[in-house]
Length: 230
Image (cartoon, rainbow, N blue to C red):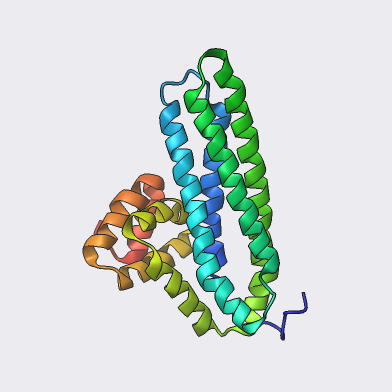
């Protein structure tokens, strides 16, 4: 791409943590859809969880469009056109998936199983598209950002996104982002959260979003790294 102004000097990467979490959520959901039977009693909950995962993906697009793409366009006009097209394609996919989910909810008898299979395959295609899209952002767009913005500016963009996330969405994000991170990165991310969140809110993230979703050994390592009482 010709938008790369110079050898990247900045090193901050705001894509990796959230993209790892999204990948984890998509993989978990794909596995659950693949294992679902049309007669499962918990099928309504599965569809509700699918919608929640897609809302998280949709909000991720909204944050990128509003903050990252706006800032990037200001310094490199035209640089986000391909990304914008991918985001619109994702939104069309969300509508396709919602249509299938609704058809499953209203189907009866033998008509439900082939619809569930179609939903699984459609969601698998979305996963493939999103994995490729996120890899493009990390491998192609991040170096452009790092060549046009300083680390301080990139961190300010990330802070602008975080400040827009309501508490309930933050918990949903943390449920995926923390388990998907390395042990070292977990300590760094949660240290930053603790520094910028009320003690009660930080405690809720630990107890609701983090501890139930990582192993006891990993939580002990995290607690030690954060200096929490055993």
